[in-house]
Length: 395
Image 1 (cartoon, rainbow, N blue to C red):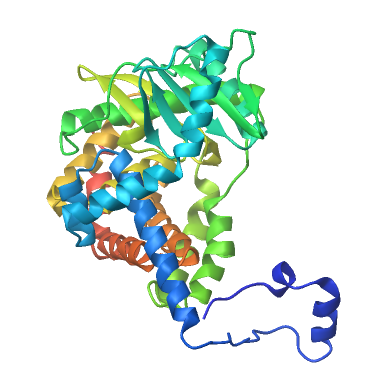
Image 2 (image 1 turned 30 degrees about the vertical axis):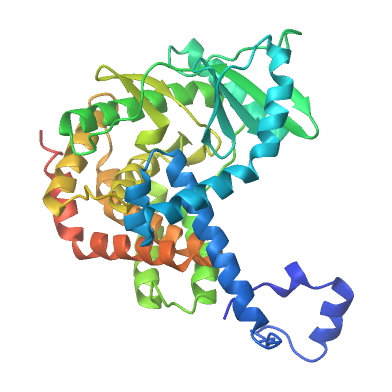
């Protein structure tokens, strides 16, 4: 049963009428089941979500064979799904081909690298936005970061000297392609150390951005006590139980005000950090940047390594070595306070509860359960994680 706030879905006059009979509690409204139509619709929706996820992972570089193992499908089935999904984006590609002359570019090679991003002639990257405010904030952020000698993509203006093009309520931003690629060896502790350094370097530069741009003020604690709790209630505590949630949320609330806040990236993973010949060469994708607790980025990155679906999964000892390397790299530039180190296991657990709730609201039960498994791994190994982090305090 899915919980929905009545004021979000019902007309005001109808809501007033209902309140004459019932208010202040949960009211179940059964769905009409017409000869199995509901089940067929749900099944179709689940297939569409699965296919979209397969296509996204294809764009991220996973092979058809690897995707087949993850989703228990043959390679030919994976291939058909990718071809079908790619066809959905064909109209957008036609529009891109039509507007490239605005930048004086003759299209020779066009390849999609993310759902809203295309690589042009192996030299440029075109990103499509529907939110103009977000686009302009990202442009301003990139300009400030460049002034701070942070390697971010340089904007290529149109031939009319405009920073972006606007066509049919879409906004097109062209940038020069950054040198480098994503790290392939996720278990390399030396590169994990450099990743920690890279996150700290970005955090230092973000403080300059905060002086000139207003960013969304977010709070992991407010999310935990708000929509996350509501989503878990709607899911009837099937994946994260009520006691697990309450224990984590209570400890987070106890320590939250002691944790430094600042502008963060909010989507730190190897795909958004580029390296060339072993050194950082670029940062990408600031769409989710917001003010929040500083350690969110570190915790998000570290838990993300556990969540990745790959044959080369981490053992506990391997992951703990990466935890040490990343935090050591970060602290080589920015020291963490004792409260932050003590809070990291709880923040990691809260992030996985967040993802469980998020995927549950999308009715993507597979990914919700995957996040739940990572949460339990963190919970079961909480003492070892704390000991690993504490061992760094005295170096």
